[in-house]
Length: 81
Picture 1 (spheres, one colour):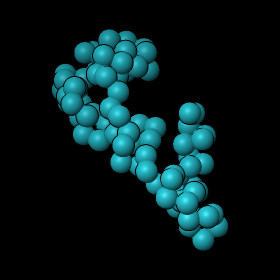
Picture 2 (spheres, one colour):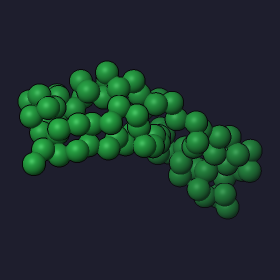
Picture 3 (cartoon, rainbow, N blue to C red):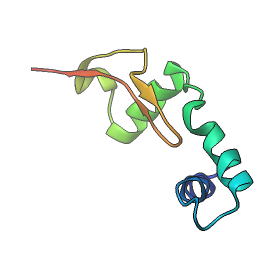
Picture 4 (cartoon, rainbow, N blue to C red):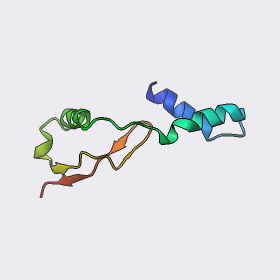
């Protein structure tokens, strides 16, 4: 599913007075079940977005995510001095 559909599901689950309870329950399920993206893919995306090697900007990026959510994942970077 694309980002738009994910956000639509989040809207439905956060508006229980506008939608049937079974819809709300169903759309609440994936909130805490976002699978982590493999770090190799994160590394590739970082290099593409930065337009240069990740190591030229960050001294270190922790390969273990701090959190993952519906459309994003958080890693702790250490910026070069």
